[in-house]
Image (tube, helix red, strand yellow):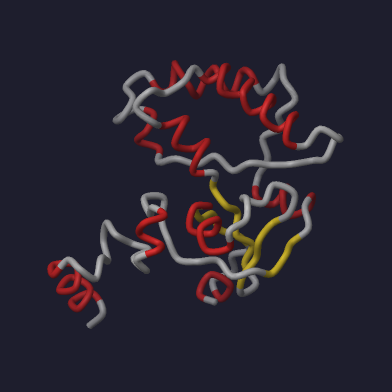
Amino acid sequence: AVLQRLGYKWTVTDDMPFRTIHAIDTPATWIPSYGGIACFLRSSWYSNLASGNNMPDGRDFAEELVRYFSRMYPHDERAYVIIAMDVETFWHHHKDGIQKFLIPFLEATTHIPIALCSGEMLLERYPIRQISIPAGSWSTSEADMRANNPFPLWKDPTIEWHQKWWGLAEL
């Protein structure tokens, strides 16, 4: 409701809490929505693969996306994936991230059947379905979700200083 009051039409959240709670695959042919806000679900698998310790070559990564989607949606069904990571991935965590991943990935998208799209473009192309979107972050695990702890890095009910911090923040 807060996002809608502020005039936003969409947001991005991680797919792992959604997959865990709903026991379904991350939607690729429709857009989940809750409370009037479209919720694009970041692929934790592909986003973490791209930004992990063994960052792949961006061109190889783009080609893998094409192979995967060709297998999963073989009948020309349009499908999408949300890949999102923190900007420091490309200069702090991976000093060569721009040269190794980002530039080759973007160059590959000009030669293979991948279209980079904005959230607004996706809203025009895919149907929206109302469904609950569970709380969580990019660092929430399945175990965290099963323990009803969607924000373990900053609002863990078992960590005393988290509770004190939030007590202060909520004054």
